[in-house]
Structure formats: structure tokens, C-alpha cells
Image 1 (cartoon, one colour):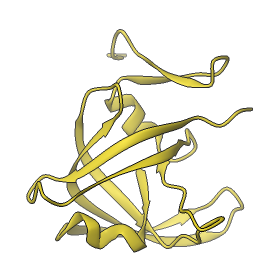
Image 2 (image 1 turned 90 degrees about the vertical axis):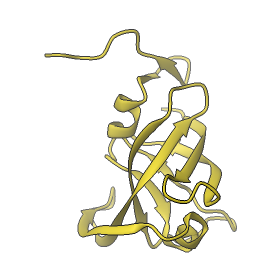
Image 3 (image 1 turned 180 degrees about the vertical axis):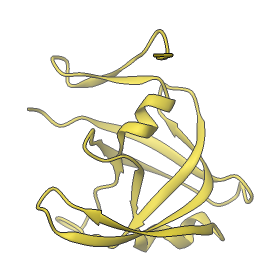
Length: 128
């Protein structure tokens, strides 16, 4: 399966001068917008909502911090208001790999096109 990477803008809604733009991997196995803890200061003073235990793809358990509120916009899709999950990450080749999880995708009305390896707009939201 190919990798899908999208450009994302994240902004502290209480301090609109604190924002960042990054390329993030679409990860339907993750729920949140996941950012490296090293970037937390770039978003200013965010409220720490919870500390959570997470299970990684390698079945390791790690701790993350849920913070917010933030405005998240995947390029080409509508902005949403949610939280971000900060996680201690190790850079690969000097770069971090943020993740866009399924909750963020659903709220943004973005679906994964498995054949085209891209995000496509969802025409209708689920009400089931």
C-alpha cells in the first residue's frame, strides 16, 4: 500500500499568531492529529486536556498529551476545530512524521482513495 501525505495547517484558536504548517502522513489507524512534542511551543499556550496511554503499530505503549483547542485544515478541505495529540517522536532522517488520524479525516470530509493514493472529498456525512 502506498503512503498518502497531505499538507496541514494547525493554529491555536486563542492565539492566532501561533500556528504551523507541515506535511503529515494519513494514518487511518490513528484517531487524532498527532504532532511531535518538540513542536508544542510553536502552537503557543494550549490547554493540556489529558494525558493518555497509546498503543503504537509495534504494540509498544507510549504516553501522549492531548491539547487544544486548535483549528486544523487539511489543504483542499474545510477547516475543523479539535484537539491535537503531542507525542515524543524520534525524527527519521532529521524529520518528524506527524499523523492525520481518522477522526480528523471524517470531520474534514476527507476520504482515502486507495487506488489514487490521495484524499478525496466526501459528498455526504454519515447520519447512521
